[in-house]
Length: 29
Image 1: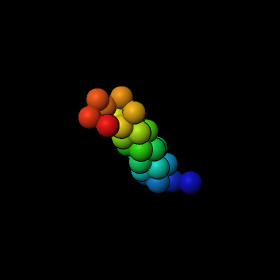
Image 2: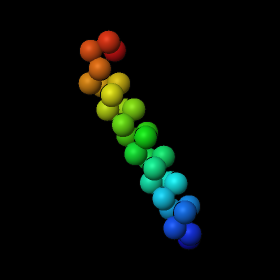
Image 3: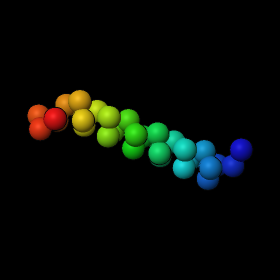
């Protein structure tokens, strides 16, 4: 497993979590 690949997966996971939290906490939703 390459460091670059691991970093990309971690970054995508962070984005997915961030968008989920924003949707749950956003007053417009």
